[in-house]
Image (tube, rainbow, N blue to C red; front, side, top):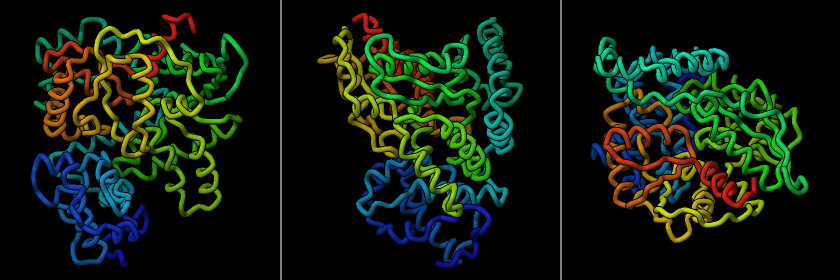
Length: 437
């Protein structure tokens, strides 16, 4: 398959994957953007058809093409539904790289804001932490409440006024202030040795989840190594078409974690884990790095996946209220991990666990989708919140920071009193009640 309209200097949508699509339409009912628009071009098979047309030279990189590649959530629900095994995520991310290379993004998207966030903040951990401290002061000093009451964010546009309340709550202490470089089990022998990814958003807004993750692993006989000088894993960049920075960040993570001998690399953020498990695809044109990335990816495990694999210590069933579970897209569709987190939640909730309708339907967070496509994101969030409320649950468990931020915003937006909790936090609370930590 020729690629006259695709640049050879960035990833090209894989011709084999494009030909693999049989256009059967089984993906249609799983696609959030198709459900909202009922337009064929806003479906996975419609977007694949456009990619084929561009690759074959029968269609240029049109405004419609550019729009659709970024209107897609990259939730990968279509991959789960696809009988032909089409790797849609790899296709759309390569197509986005092509759009980025052409310096053209969909109409209405604030590309400069996106580039600033991804390239000037998330590639520089010290800068991210500095800005996070400023944001925390703004949030906890009362300035945020005053600014929202006076509607000051509206100075920067109507969209900024809507986005301002969605800022993640920054924690007082970040991960490295909470955790030493090595955490050992307090009781019993070391049975496993693992390394922990601290993440970027996870580090500043969910450092307590990293602490809970380390505590739960230690309670299950793991010696936990927390390598210093970690940066972003590159998932946000890769999912949004910035292949160059994604490869740079991936290379740094690989080099850092290669320096420690461990049984597994534990990730408690679904989007990061999904991307890291596919690192070897980034370096397909570099045999040496490709092999190293394959070895690295083979060790990457989601926390719940690893706990079930090693046979985690069963806690007492301590929840008196109902709890439900929301599947993060890149955990259930990207990593195919669905059973394990439910085992963790059921272990604590017992008969008080209730299954969520459309649990694997995207909540609208999708990386930075809720920043770049706010209105669409809120439509998806409303659908998700209605399903959560219908369960009667007082707690919703999810394993991804983006989902947690989105669902927390949903609770505030719709006046719902439901706690959003990570599986690690849920399990640590149960262990503490039984005196196991």
